[in-house]
Image (tube, rainbow, N blue to C red; front, side, top):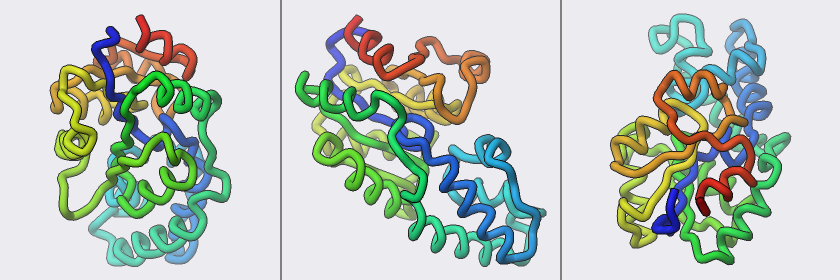
Length: 218
């Protein structure tokens, strides 16, 4: 990575924030409300990354064909909005990285498949003033791996593709960066393993926020 990069666009869940326990608790709240079996955190880890519709499609028996799917989705959203910060916290080194990157003049944004209200709220609560451009899933814009949300972030930051890097923890993030025509750094501490990322085409993997800084500065 060269210092021609002046813009870092992050994924949120599994990259900047460890949200797994709160996501699993909200999934299981919905399951219990509708009389379905609950899921372990490790099972939920494998379900996240493609937005709440896909998450609940995998969590609910028979997915969207289930007559209770819409009720489960509603229960999940209501519970998660109220409990999204119960256990969620930045991964080690995140806040120090953001402060250092801000001082170094990097422009930063978050692009996520989490629903937009939660993305904006979490970024405001955890990452202000370092990250003020935060875009999540909504009916107005195609979600990742479509590049639309990345393009929207680039437009808000007045950044050119050749000066941007996408940082994420999943195969969806790798595909998103490719579709947007920008470079990608994967992270090994999130919801997908290093082996999984390599098998899905990751060429650059950071093992810590300190390592991410070194890769950007290289």
